Length: 139
Image (tube, rainbow, N blue to C red):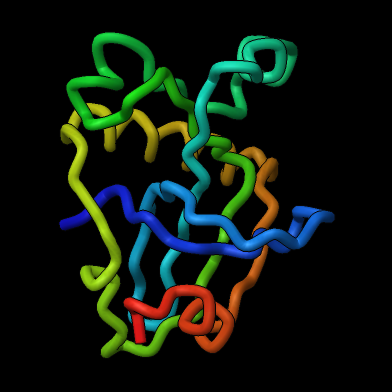
């Protein structure tokens, strides 16, 4: 099982429409789609991560970040789901990936579930065609 993938995305909610390689948390893989969540550095975003909407984020801070392969303290925005449509034969393993501890994975999934149940999630759809065009290794 892979928990973190490095994928190139043109985030639908990014007004600059830049395509960037980004660490993504793989929350759920169903037969025809995968739900990804953005992993970002906390550095420079402390006010947002620890501010009035802190419950929207799962933080990964020392020593947990280094134990799980994150170079810097990081966070996952659990309110923004990037749902990539995939055929059943699409293999995400072709992308750079790694696992995290079961404890960290469960904590992130718990936060995601809480926010989904409270109606605080936005789902952004990405087609398989788009995803493949941005990630040549995936072809």
